[in-house]
Length: 607
Image (cartoon, rainbow, N blue to C red; front, side, top):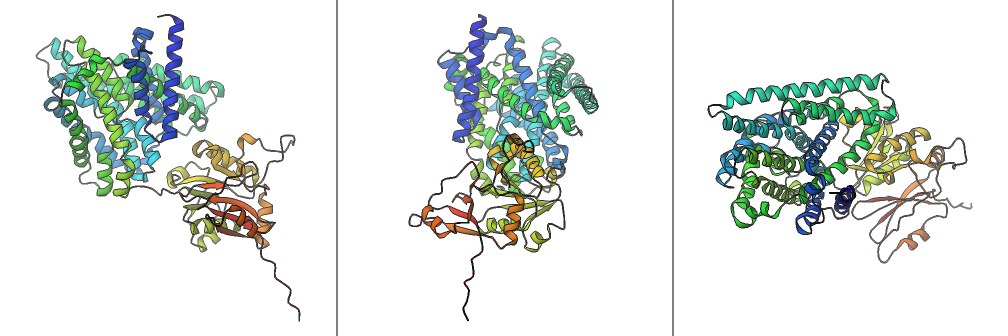
């Protein structure tokens, strides 16, 4: 295929992948389902994209390196301190769960799906994978409580390389048996496990070297991202020379090790590496879906076995695996049942299945090609079943976090305490954060939720669950500190969801803070902290006004003093929308308008 055709294919894959991600964001549907549909339409149905013709022998290494970078990015997001509440459960799922899940998956593949024994055993190992690239967005969207969230997230990232290793063990065993019929599992497994341990040690050593170089300034800032990603690829390729797919173990260990090293400069690359992960997940899944052939799907169309296998996987294999693994732990039963239900598969399952399907064919083992269509069926079935039921199941089992958007107030002042009381009155979750125990005194006396600590301290991420808070208001007396807080959290909650007191002085002023690091200025008049606190001392208070069809926003404004300032509206859904110097939300019936108003003037009484 010509270079021009390859360029068109790359552009089409990118457009379809990112387009599917955008559509998922707009509709709330699982992104992986839309990507699968887009790839299937572009490949088998229309023939618009033919990855094998476009990339030839480069397709497999491209996908392998992409999967490695995805696993590294997942590992880089995980801090071991998150395991303080769920470590034992994750350990049980990564040991007992692997053995039970592999056994049950293989039995279901052999007796129900009708796979030949080697294919069933290999596929049972691959099914251990639960897909962090699918699980993590699913949990974030559903707002699950901290412990089940942590268990599922860590299980996904740990079991991705574990499932690959199990598949390697199965493949190498049947390959050796094919060459040496007298070989046993004890002849094959130990060398493979040693290879995996060695790969993990290489990944750990690479992370320590990167940590040493970065913290000593041996690598300039503009080269840190390229050096890091090239090192990940080099470690993956090197460890794969030791044993096929051992590189997945190495890059995962490397990512987790770096995540738990004190490297401040790594924080600045998080947005970039997350963007890379989105691009890779989108591109790889489109390529794999477009690579499907109609003949690989005939097994799904002509037999009842794959559908019975999917039901067994959803309602027998996964629940039994989790319940056996967590038996005897302190995890409550409602959380065990939730974990037992949620296990969507993703990109790694499809990529590994496609890789070993080809290799089984090279060994002369029939049925390997069935894995490709069956793995896609597993992905679709699990993503649809779990993606569309997660909210319902979470509510029934009472593991769902607060669904109403919360407000995090940084800085304990009379103004923020008064605002927090108003937010509690309208049913919005609220929290006041301050590093001064003395300044928190009034919040404590009022019985308001509060956190004593520095919001910018990394330890806060592990001691304070920020999930319920979708809006942040920085309202300390230090404008520069407020801007720093907004800049820190803008990427996490969104630039339009971080606010601070005080309007900027303008681009012409040499003392003005750059707009790029500031939050949006509260109030249409852009009051600064000193003005707000002065008005609070003068007796200004908050006032709530409920709008209806009979009493609209214009009627509410007539009831307010001419000096009053509109602060925010609370939708019936709980969504918070603030009035700022740049944005004025459109109030509607059912909204609650919260204003900051001056005290009522007392009329003079004549004697």
